[in-house]
Length: 331
Image 1 (tube, one colour):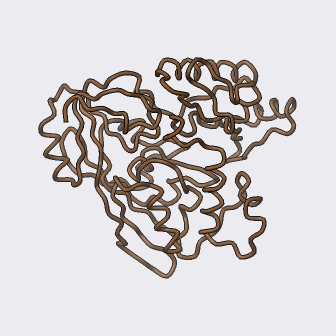
Image 2 (tube, rainbow, N blue to C red):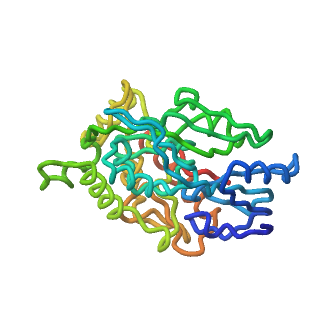
């Protein structure tokens, strides 16, 4: 479709247009579409639009996967391999896994977006990351139309990073992701306030964990249909031990998570210490229940949201000496 509105394809509510937009529901259909795109035209592949901030109309072609399907391709007494179409809604997949009592993704409940994006972004929450359960990623090279299967190791996963966001950014469209899930789930309850949410439970199940996380997320994250937002706007900074100890000296009650000798400090806590929680700047604001979330109060431009983001980054740097960076992609 030409001159296509992207309003329903980005949760920030930016009313921008793409020069051309294509949904595809199979590899064959994607290959046919790729043959029609001029060699010099910009191409962007999107998922559910929950991690994007469009700064203006997109003068190129936007692709979106509608490839569906959840298929068990191998199963043992211990685990199961599940191949999932990239166009499946992520939380629908999580719900399906929990219904089957397959563990590994329950802590990632209610994260917006689609399965393909989970492998690009290495989505994470409450002590879990997509990389922990991804086995392989199948993709089509946009330039040649050729198929390639990436192993977990080849995806070069790191905190909110992958090869698809760095070395191969914009070069592939993900068609399927295969996950290895456990038939004997090990519950992860020590991140955030999961245990407090489950305090009245005795024999905790993965469904209990899912419901607890849904309750926690719904209590602090705004509905994008009511307030335009892209969920967590900033990544949590990971700092050295020396930097951590220096900050902790002034803020002994600072929340943190140790990981491989480094320290992850919640960006939302830092932003709140800078006085930004609930504060508006023009038609953009910091959410009053979760300082990690920037919201569109109605009619905000991308410039207003970026200006607010820049002001927050400046203040966190001034107060803590730490750089924080947007998790949202500016397009």
